[in-house]
Length: 378
Ligand code: 5AD
Image (cartoon, rainbow, N blue to C red; front, side):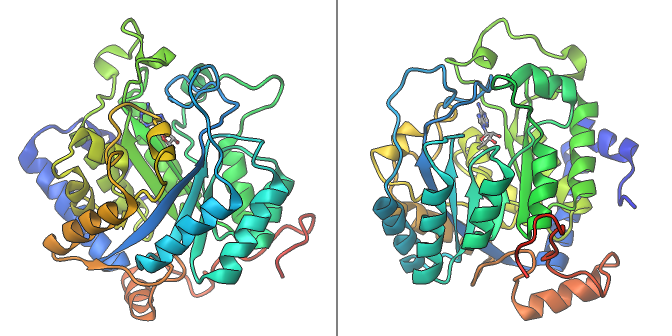
């Protein structure tokens, strides 16, 4: 049962009174503290490839753009992973465009090497991939997968995500499949996509809850001038159009925390891009509990511009690490230790969560079940 009705979510999304919004953020902050504690987990983001076969109307990596492309080597990825370990992170996120130059075997070898050489949790974020590929990566040891559905509205989704030939696109289906495979699953949306209405964003939040997501990433839509949605004459939803601003993102993060109390919610780089001064802090104060410092080395870092003006692009991994830890410290929060997954928090915190969470059921365990036809993983 939802903790907020559809109408309540909608009203909050339309709320603009700062005094009212402070109440929402305080409530989300309290839910965050009760369910996931004061720890802020650091996930080292390694952008392993900027090749992409897709033509998403908002993304700077879309295939149609002529730009230098790269794909990191096995050894380059492993060097970043070891740096993550040295910097004290509990997990790495290997992200890339939808790049079939990243073969199932290559990726599985990288995952096996990370698991053999480190204690890190491994999160993948490689777009829509085939079931057998996802399964082989899970078998190789990948723990989590991030795939934003971007919008739950089928018409808006179709309008901004051209199909690749006859290949259907079903991100929610892939998320459900990955959960069956035993992945922790993460998704998310952009707030302020041209054509996105308050109704749609409310339904996105309800879908987060329905999917019982383990991780949810929310950022503002940022117009990239060299993409179709960055054009000046782009059509919006008029007075129903969700604006792309910091308040909108913070409201969405806060509501997500309330409907998904146990989820890991990052204060995203896109949020830091629209407010470089303290966007990340605001994310942590409205329900967020994760930072994703960028580990991608130069010159690749500059070549992974999914949107213009991306924050942190001119820093290196060590600077990002120092900056993030300082921000966490100044807020009086703690840097998380260990992998920091939804089901692998420190014991004390899990106990706290169990006692506080009315929804917790004794049978709830990390999903390790797999459909018989998939036939893997115990
Ligand atoms: N503005 C904001 N976020 C974007 N992303 C891609 N392009 C943009 C943009 N122009 C986000 C998408 C994607 C994630 C990796 O980056 O939500 O899932």
